[in-house]
Image (cartoon, rainbow, N blue to C red; front, side, top):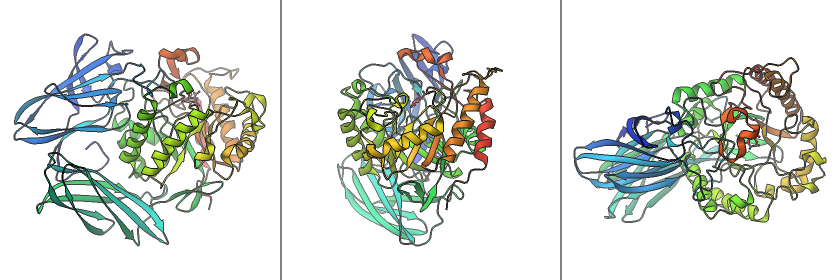
Length: 568
Ligand code: ADA
């Protein structure tokens, strides 16, 4: 449900999207789910609690599983005032089970809170908005005493064929023992996996050899269904369908390889943010964004700086758009990384992102900790630990982090030095990625900056890895035209982007880049961001928050049109 394809044919599911009662800021309201609190008149800048509630009805005793794809950003879910569970962080899904629910009407409530504080290590005042509310779709399922919690299918190229590693996680409810069989259908094959479950979760695994499969690629994004059916005591009680694309991702010393061929990545950063909707972007608007991104000529998108709605990834799978998906965290200082909740919350964001989105072939990079304190020894221990967790969950994608820490000892012109020690974590990752703003924040020439930075990272753990510019761009206020072509005018932004892109394309060391950014996004009023963020918006969008194109649109489109993405 709320995906780009049908995920269940046996499990009963109903949407919880629609009108809910909401009490917030001392007012009783009716709110549409999913949406942001800030979209409600009078709550545009609200920070506080909101309690959503609605009735649900059951006609027999059953186990209900409530699935939320995203609640921003601290959520507590209750059924008839009994707490089912709590989830922190806006950008990953969670589910709670209420066992043995009696027939009749029941009150489902969700208490949301978007207040900052020490309890929230990742949601801090920032250059993007932490909204409040039930901001992604939600639904309720009826599940049997043992149900399929997840199904992953990871392809790996193997001497002209594919190995497809299947993993089915089963969750028990009562703890009563059951003998069970899971039948998995994938790429024209069927395999039956047997097991016995009691109180503990059970994982069944199997690797299929697939001799012939059409590859997934941007030119031909072929998808295959993988379907698991759970039988207990001879009857089919539950099912789950996922999709897989057969493709491999590797790094050569200078390029990212997709299916063995070097890629030239021309991507764009995108915040999930839109005028009127905040981060709760409806499906049609997501598709409109993707239409514009493809029309501009980009072949990749970076989900700066948090995991995205799975529906967006479904569309990227179908359209063949490559994705750098990023765990939640932007610009945390050493002190913020020392928050006692930081490691646990980061680990949760990264592991939930990877386990929930592992089947999307579009995802070629898993990213972590954008511009955090990677230039400190403590920061390095955090990067190391978190990358260890990420690699243990998936070793078929490249692990990356966007840095802005350029060290004094790197041999760079003084204007480019941004940190005493420089990034200490490049050696831990599969590519070296930097966010740079030549011609915007720095009065330096883009080609020169690329050349100097490439040389600089060679002795800083970056040798033998693809070199990627994870952010580059300039700002303009929509509608601000100026014959002087001054900064903040649409003219100047388009001049700068044109010049940046031509330098990026001319530099053979650059394996890929991501323009900052697709659309203007709202920033928090807290934390001093308003000072160089006119309108409390980050105005570096190629389109504004209504998706109205700035002059940069035509400039970027023209610069990218002739690009050939595969270099073979
Ligand atoms: C950084 C950061 C982005 C954004 C950008 C900017 O590189 O990663 O989130 O803040 O700078 O606009 O300055």
